[in-house]
Image (cartoon, helix red, strand yellow):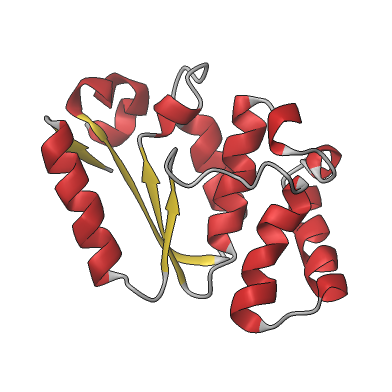
Length: 153
């Protein structure tokens, strides 16, 4: 976790992260929403289809297995507007993890899932999918540190 005291510093850090991880950057942020006209599973599968030429059938099977692993199989056929904030966030996270050798950057997670009291649910999902990505970085503002609990001490 890295904390910033201004929007400008956070924005510069995000841009630097994207430059440094040019080929495997996998951001999870409000600026890269799910495609609203596609089901959740397809939002995730498109990464494998376009970047690895994986067939629709193979990518669908892969995504359904990962959704099941996370206990999210019930959201597979829902579109963006039918998802709750937490479901949407986890679909976005799984989509990012589909990038080969993913360097995930979660930018201000509590903006996307404001009802979360702390970072624990996100950390649990990251642990469940830790074999899908090479690294994960969380950027947030310093005044949000209390939501990160013992991780900041």
